[in-house]
Length: 136
Image 1 (cartoon, rainbow, N blue to C red):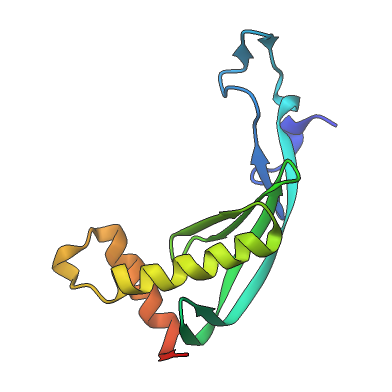
Image 2: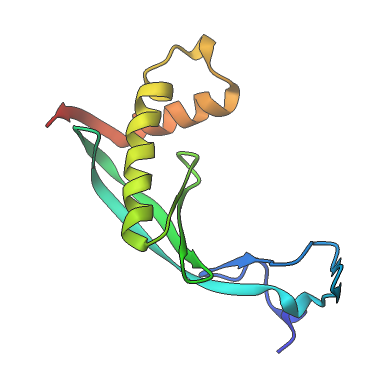
């Protein structure tokens, strides 16, 4: 199969290239086929528990999870601008929950004039999603 004929991005897959994007290294030239595609899955949080708080969510938060090389797991919410890492699926999900709680404090609770335009968009997304926050 020639990867050049596949749609990019491939639905349900993330691409990781283990060689320079220019296609060459000290070892030689690498064709496009050197790219590795890893299956991804999407999960949805209805509540987030982290750092002694429970976030009750108005809307489900879709999170894409994928594995790179068997021992590097990633969780991403583009809307909330979170990209979390772990050495296992559960560690990556725990990292995502912790990042969620930290960003709630650092961004969603900050005044707009102290934030960049990208951070303001993330703040708005948090406020659209979070119904309430309780201390455990």
